Every structure is written in C-alpha cells, then in structure tokens.
Image (cartoon, each protein chain N blue to C red):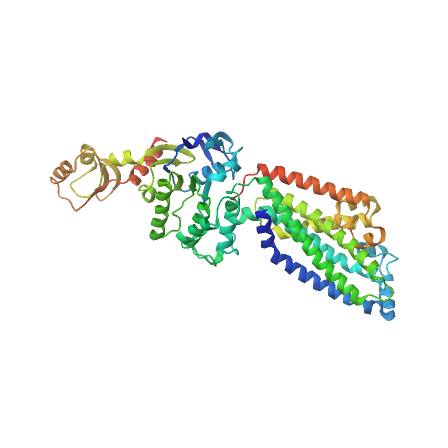
Length: 297
Length: 271
C-alpha cells in the first residue's frame, strides 16, 4: 500500500521558488528520506502534505486520502516533528503532553507516561527552560502519542548531539519494525543513509532522483584522494576515474569503480606524496548529482 | 473543548492583570466621587466647565446636563475611559488570537493534530470571549463594590445595580465588536508584529471618527464608524441601548467572523 503518493505536486509563490511537479511514492513500512540542500523545497513539501499550505497544482494522497479534503482524518494517524521546535514557551512539558493526548480519545494515561519515561522527559520543566535536544525529545514524544502509522520528521537531526541522534534513530527503527512508515527530510545524506530504505533527492524544488539505498550502496566505488607531481588529469581519466575535485598542486579526488588491486598496481608506477583510498559514500554520489546538474545548465 | 481549555488557561494570567489594573483605576476614580459631590468642588468644576466650548465638552462626552455630583453622571464620565481600555483589550485578544500561533510557530504543534481549521477559529473565539467576559465580571463587580461604598444615601442599591449592569453590558458588546474585527485582522495578517499598536490604532481611529461626527454636523455619519459611540456609558445610562446601534454592532461582528472563517480556511500558514 502506498502511504504517501504525490502527483505533480506543485506549490509556487509569487517571490520565492516553491516546489514543482513533485512525484514521490512512499510504501508502507519503509523509512523514506527526502534529501536536499537548504532551500530546496523539503519543508515546503512537508508543509503542503500536512495542509499548512495549499498546493497550487497537482495532488497528493496520504493513506489513499486527499491531503486537502481529508487532512483532518489523515492527521489522526500522523505524528509530526517540526524542524525547529517552537511549542508554547511558558507551558510545562507535562501540559504539552496532556494537550497532545487530548486530541486522541483512545490514548490512555499509561501509554502517555510510557512514552514520556522512554524518552526521559523532564515533565516539570517549562518548554523555554529546555535545551534544543530536549525540546526535540518533547516534539518526538508528542508525535508518538497516538502510535501513528506515519511519522513525518522535518530535519530531525538538526541541533541534536550524536548520542541523541542515535536514540532518535533507534526510535525510528522501532517504528519501522512495528510496521509504521517514516518520512524524514535532511540536508545531510550521510546522517540518514544508514537509516533510510529509499531517498528522494530534491534540488531547486524538483525531484532529481530517487535512490534505493541498498542497491546504490552495492554499486559504490572507491573514493581516492591523492597528491603527486607525476600524475595529471589525463592519467586519472585513462584509469577511468571520475574526477570530483582537483587543485593546482596536482591533488585530485576521484571515484574509481574497478578492482582496488588494479588501482594500486597502476598507482605504484608513480611517485605519490599522499594517498587515501576509502569507500565512496553516498554523499559523494549525491553531490555528483548536483554538480552534473549544474554542468548541464 | 481541549483547545478551549488550553487557550483559556494560557490567557488567564494576562486577563487577571488587565482586571486588576482596570479594577484599581475604577476604585481610584470612584473613590474620588464623594469629594466631587461636595458643594465647593461642584462649584469649582461647574465654573471650569462653563469656560470650555460646547464642542470641547461634546468631544469628552459631556453635555449641558452633566452633573458630576450625581453618581451616575460621574460614573458614566469616568467609566468611559475604562470602556476605551476594554475595547483595546478586546481588540488585542482578537488580533493575537490566530496570528500569534503562526508567528511563534506553535501552530506546527496545533495544526499537526486532527483538527479542522474552522474548529481552531471556533474554540479560540470561544476562549477569548470567555476571558473577556471574566474580565468584565471582575471589573463590574469591583465597580459595584466601590459604588456601594461611596454612593449617597438617597441612591437605591437596585438603581445602582441596574445602571452598572447596563454600562457593563455595553462595555462587553463594545469589546466583542473590536474583538471580532481584531480576529478578522488576525486571519489576514502575515505576522504578529505590531499586534498591540494595531489594536490601539483601530480603536482610536474609529474613536476619532466618532469625535469628528459629533463636532461637525456634515460628518455626522462618521459616528457610525465609531463603535465606542454606540455603547458610550453616558448614552446608555440616559437612553439605554439604541436598537440601530445594536444591529450595526451585530452586523459588524457577523461580517468579521464569517470573513475570518473564510480567510483562515484558505490561508497559507506563515511558518
């Protein structure tokens, strides 16, 4: 079953660029990443899906229901964590949680207190007294209150320390194990690549690719960083290397998709000052998309 | 009703502050009445007032028949300033009601929940009306107690209660008119910057229209743009509610609230 499906979803503004013909399809039980640089249209897409703003073209469904007409019904089964948590400053965490609970008649006090305990919330503190990470915890907790079938998170790693990030990812994996779906946006693919099943790459308001991470990881090559007076661009191209970066003092960063042994054999013919061979990460692939796109222009 | 309860609780503190401040002003004004009723003072005030032009007196809602030694005349005069403050308070409640959630980002919490936009408007409206009603009850009760303490022996308690009731009913409706206009502005606004200046502004611009309408016969129609003059305490005590003004007030409220629902339902939230 498709949990989210958009058809040419468009939101245009008078002054700013919005999103254009977004087509994505999120399956039940998957963790779907929505990746792009700041200002690419990630939040606009999420806010359109949640009916904070109205689309100017196309359509979208969540759980098979229209995001505009049925937004209230849809939200019965959605938990949303905003990018910046700006909840009622002077209200205590316990009151925020009770307020969240009050929107769902079937949520018991025991379930609520279990979530708060799991996330170690400081219930007596006011929102304004919390650190960024703790505010995020409250946002996550209130989003989980009704055991949502779909969890939407806008830049969830923003402002989180690595420990808190790990905790968050564990929660998301648990949600997936329960059969729930997670849709999250991020500007940093590296952060979420271990977590997501698929990612859609968005740039300047348009989806430029959808990557299946398992498949893509298998086809990853080697990322080589080297510095040598003997090696020039031509030699690297002859090796079938795909240059990512070069500097004037004969330093190169390139991707290599053949066997590592053959690379080492080839490079041993030259005097090399510095050499680093590592597994290509998806972020490089991701950057490639952007750069290629820029070149196409 | 959860939104209603949450909003009511959140607004309660500022409501109590407004009530205490206005209550203290009422107590101060009314406690000056016994000295105002004193013969010497009366002569002094009448002397000074006769030196002022009729137009100037009209602008302050004072006419030839105003007698400050009469507790009701005196109350009508001083309470009009409380009515002005109340109208501004009503407008502030209205202006802040919707747009504040967007500007402060809290709408991301509220509207991610299964709630229709129309219901957000309804519950918020209900909560600000209740808060404003509570404010009116507190300051009205203060007025009653202070008046009971300072009233001359020849004034019946029942007359006092009836007159205070009509003044505060007027003040309640006046606040509602500005509250509904404020809520309409709140639905239209892109940010909550200037919420309080706008609230004060809409009141005083309309009040100015009222003054011009009173001073220049050619511009008498401008009185209709001043809700304050529909329910001015002095007029209410003299003539009671004028049906045409009650109807105009209700029409303003209906137009404002219907527009609020329509605009808010189609609005792109500014977050």
